[in-house]
Length: 191
Image (cartoon, rainbow, N blue to C red; front, top):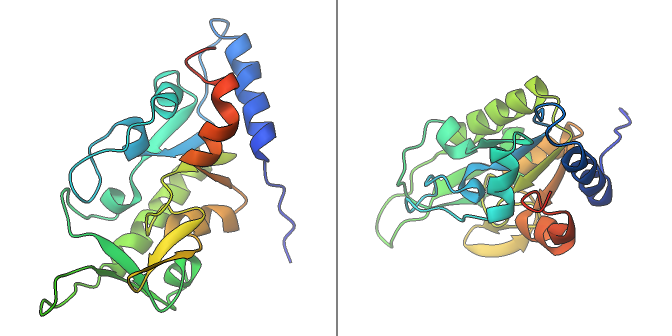
């Protein structure tokens, strides 16, 4: 079994504080992947965002790259909301579970598994390209969920497809709540 060294939340915060302390000396190099909706991009299923000013500041300061796995996988904005069926995020990546749109009764759900899988792998490719050590992702999403996702219409503990793939490949994954709860004293905008 491959042994992975995963960055802890405290290590990520310490790295950010250290980089902010030397701001102005050299341009920041991205080392984080963040959910694009948290950076203010209007890419959620309903056409909105989930702006988190601290996450947006990380992108603006060059510490992070914003990605929307669902958009990267070819889904439009807006789009039907989706949920996992038959398993959690890594099961989707491994081809053992599906992602289906949530539709009103009597309307056939669309299978968007390929879009979610493709988006997860494109996000993983970007993480490798920048040698990302951590990711801040939108919890609750079938792509980015870190602690919780919707499985067959019920909220459960688990990871979405992208969060699971990143974590499996040694990238530390944090929800926006994880980051906000512990990082406000090291907020990128305070620098």
